[in-house]
Image 1 (cartoon, rainbow, N blue to C red):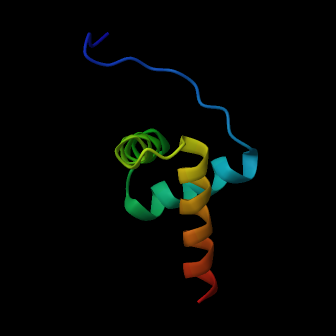
Image 2 (image 1 turned 90 degrees about the vertical axis):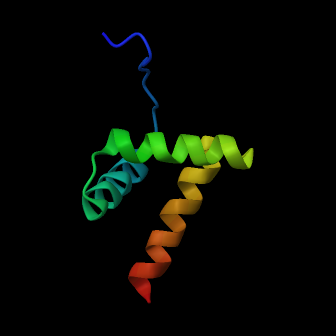
Length: 66
């Protein structure tokens, strides 16, 4: 195990998880990398992870509808 990295589980509603999977696939990354990026963004913006995830999903839904 890399001593500079730790892991944990984030439980989210299934629809949010599936959407994260779609976003990750469209970016050519995996879900873990996408969530890691969102966590780092959230920490920088002082925004809760769930709020940030929901905002990302809403933005992606709006883009898809346009």
